[in-house]
Image (cartoon, rainbow, N blue to C red; front, top):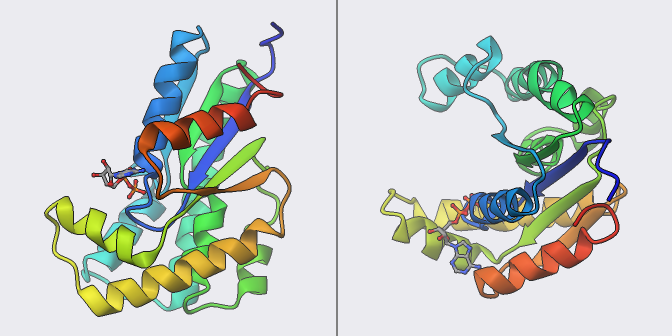
Length: 201
Ligand code: ADP
């Protein structure tokens, strides 16, 4: 099989939708088939921008919604330059837990969607993007079972809006698959593998 050119695969979805689980399973599967895989995540924890994101999320500093969204773009740019593009050029498969679709889905809770698409323009479109479609009720159940505190109503409402925004974003870009994420983990994994058949595997 021709494996010279790298492939870029992205998982997206609301918190608790199963992205980390599916990213890891895909990495394990591809490694078992001798692909070189880079599993990564956005926002990163390395860039100056990502440190500011963390400061804002932890209420150490404040920013406008637009400034906050710009930091994700700055972090993404550095992540592409330092890790994603070099890895793809070396022929590796890059699997990323979140990418610019997260900026559109979460950012449009309080910023304009077209403005968000504009500031994310120019970033490469992944070969495949899987958006895990999970209801807010199930996301909250899963988040709670991880033992982290959840502000139930606010979070549930937000998760529902984020999912709606993802569905809208899915229609705007090529190579995006909405995957029903409330089925058993392995059933979802098998569906993902079947969608990758013509580009990998
Ligand atoms: P995310 O990365 O999207 O926040 P995780 O992959 O960490 O979500 O999954 C959140 C929790 O839900 C974890 O405890 C995980 O084991 C569980 N989980 C993930 N996918 C499924 C699934 N399809 N069915 C049931 N539980 C799942």
